[in-house]
Image 1: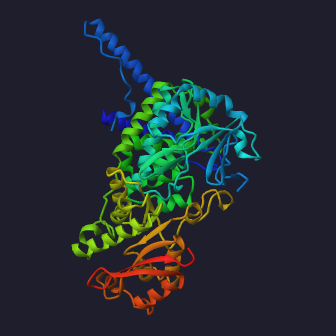
Image 2 (image 1 turned 30 degrees about the vertical axis):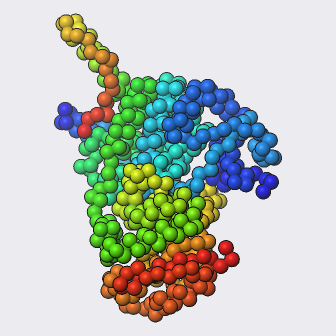
Length: 75
Length: 468
């Protein structure tokens, strides 16, 4: 898990170059893009958990309570 | 006073403004935001927040109470007065942390009522003792599922980043925050945090990723993807998750190292004998019991020992000032744990907070915000006079100018502490004597009593300002 996390991080950082910036542009832009990304990850995880729960119940496992989101739980 | 006066710091939100009328504090709710105000009111959230002590009460009062002002409000609210308005650059680490947690707790609770906060200004939180309280009723707006967290960037700059500065790098936020009033930008913080600390998911996401996204959005030739991102939105469950995880993370932040600075273990290792500190405590208790100051300022409060004594003896509110971060953190913890009406604040007395922000009056200087009814300056004078070269006469008259009565400790040159301060420098302080001190004090005040409390000759001077 830690290794894949590291690879993802390096990948994301490499995708973003650095070049001259206009400092007077709205400073909230970075925050909004980050939230869209975090929201997307959380959504995907919920979907994955629901899907996993369905597979388990198909094979007769007892259904678990509604999954909670722990997208930011990785350390 | 017949005319309501607009608070000079209340201009950013045209939806309403804070006015002072004599000793009372009012907030206008203007027609443009009245509908949102009603929706939030109807949700029941505010009642719950006030009941929990998280939000300052606001009572609807007759609009005519305000008299004529620039606003034609739909509603007029009255708030109870905060004893001393304080700013995040005056708060010790633990106060800023408590404020950050309150902000997140309020947001999490508000979501359950379909209400959000429109911003994340740290200046919207004030302290009563060590208890943070949210003061801006107009920051609450109706929430719709999918709304992004509008205040996220501001939360990072005004709460998270200053906390990380101390927690990750061991640097107190106060000086930087005072200079850059809106907090510490994520891009600046990102440049300072070492790579290995960015391997934690929270630092990676909220600092590095955010800074990089911001930088790429600001590139000269790139089209911002923010409008697209805003359209995608943030589902309620994701927002709740994000707030919850941030809260868990911040709750665990501690000052890095918490290494012993000048006075960290002063309370146990300083040069007093127990009997002597008892004598000192008794004098402070007698003073507080006689004068019953409504608000006492404790200069050089350390971990708040004497503030506590003054509070127990008759003072109602204590504000402690110190420039030692560990002492302040200790005082804040004590105030929280013992439920004291003590607010410890960062102050470099040789450079007290001044008016700043828009018009240099948006954030007020310390002396303009409140006046003390009593002042304690114990083991304080020598640090400024000897270490900072503040002329003794000027220093005495500054302290006396703060409050009509008080107690000042004079520590003579032969005392171990002063000897230590002088050990590495030339003694140029020819007028640093008890006689000169007493003369300077009697120029501006009556000396009520002068009592020696240590064998080394430390003396407590209780004074009453002339003409007060």
